[in-house]
Image (cartoon, rainbow, N blue to C red; front, side, top):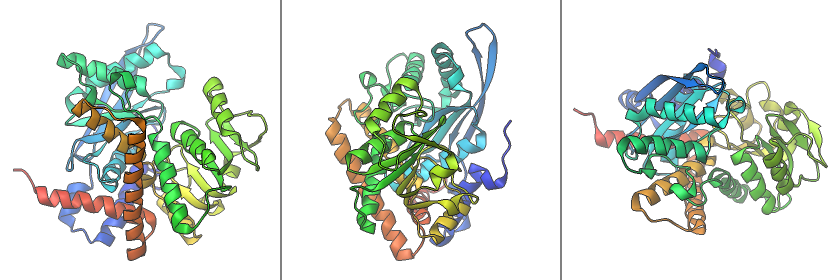
Length: 419
């Protein structure tokens, strides 16, 4: 079992951020007790018969933080470093995230402690179906709706949908989002997180009077969100000068050819060795002089020890929890404008909501309609957070948490306690 200190424990950091915002809001203790902690925490054992015939036991989790404003909603990640506290933190952030963009969901998250890079497609399918059967009583279109996250994808969601549907006796596409289009998925869902990141960056540029053309960009984490954000910023005229993935970092001061880099990543699975680039290490990447730094990997990558080296004008959090509270204070004192995760990367859950609505209505939208709706939601949310930031003179993260927590607090007060 992995161990963490309080300083790098994602759940402790989530609670610290909650308290900071709740203090500024003046929330009473009764309301805090009702909305601060998860409603349900499930730990399950997932036995899987591996390709060589032996049984391997995996630890897995599903956490429902809140259902006050609607069904719980949140991704499922497969990663060797998944812990229960990480999943609890991610579920907590999902609650505030859904409230910030004002969609009628609460927060949830799932995780399986495994290494999908060393598992076959068959083993991943068996793992997914067995995990789904273990959490079956908790999920459903009106209860809890999983979605893709780290090292899960549309195929994973198809297996979950099929497993759930087979137990019910008919197809229920609304049990998950991020599905293949042919199974009720939404156009625009795959690029939704990255597109939402870019909409918030453009809003920040407007606020700070920064031109997007020729702006320099560094992307840490070149997965789905990071690569799509890089592509869209490249298309908008920005120069992406450095990117990284789990294999290494590549840099070109004149700008990387992002379409070619994405093509190489798709074919080879890595960015390392990209032509017309030079390798740099992870510490150098975060310290590059740039306009936008987009942390799009895992949590706690910018912390007290490296935050003072960050020279970006804007840090746009495409990942969940990439900046610790201690690092936040350093970035704030250095004049870095942070677009917090629960705002910046909310495009994914927003289009997941759109997908759920389409499944429930059995009526599907054109891609441009999805993009237009997403742009309106993200830019409205940015304005709402920015207004609190300016009026209350608090950092953007506290402003975003105040907006999300305030909406959940209002809902719980109106609903009261049953019985």
